[in-house]
Amino acid sequence: MISTIIWNDRGIRSSGAIERLKKLKQIHKLSFIALLEPFRDNLHIDFYLNYFRIQLSMNQATANINNKIWLFWDQDFTGTLLDQDEQQITIELKHVELGETIHLTIVYAKCKPTLRSPLWENLRHKSTIYLGFYGPRYTWSNGRGPCSIVWKRLDKDLANDNWLSSFPTTTITHLASTGSDHSPLPLEMNVRQKSFKKYFRFLNYWVKNESFMSLVQKVWNNPIN
Image (cartoon, rainbow, N blue to C red; front, side, top):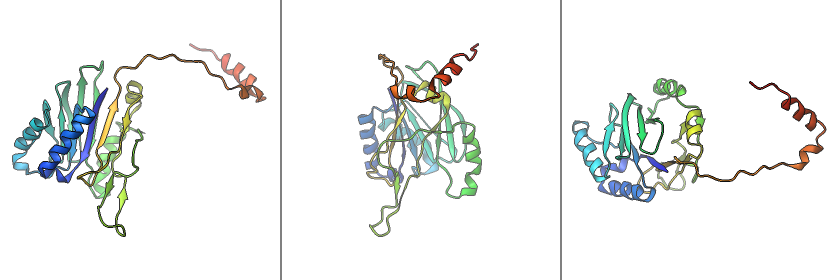
């Protein structure tokens, strides 16, 4: 199983955020980490990336052009940067257990809808299927009191048919947003399919439908090349 995590955390400025990431990495056995909105000095981005890479015991690190998206991966991955702009970064990854490469796009969208149009056009050609999730429904909160608190699901995961064909058991989990206004989102995908017995099952009530037998005969007689 390969585990990755996506986390939007303004609190990365504190040392406690690094410890939270370390703990998440240990619990979920993470081999890839995407960190959004780190709010670090762009003049020293190479220093910060290398510092976090070492602290997280990762092999490689990179960031998009405005340093709003940071990526880290361990020695099990070989990563090649494919595309990037101010709202996304796309990387090609090859895992030691995979027989094929995967393309992963991490998004940090602009606040204004008009500025997000180029991003949506870019993503439309890459993925269309919503992966769903486990855990709480909302991924962000403004952290205010009971009378003015706001909850939203700002963070989502999409995939295409090729991904689901290769990794049909991919799961996304919304974790508790401890120490951040966003929830960390671990993604897990099984690389090796477990062998199991497949049993033939038939619901007897279908034969009581008057059109059932004719439908079966019609489908059965269709020519197949």
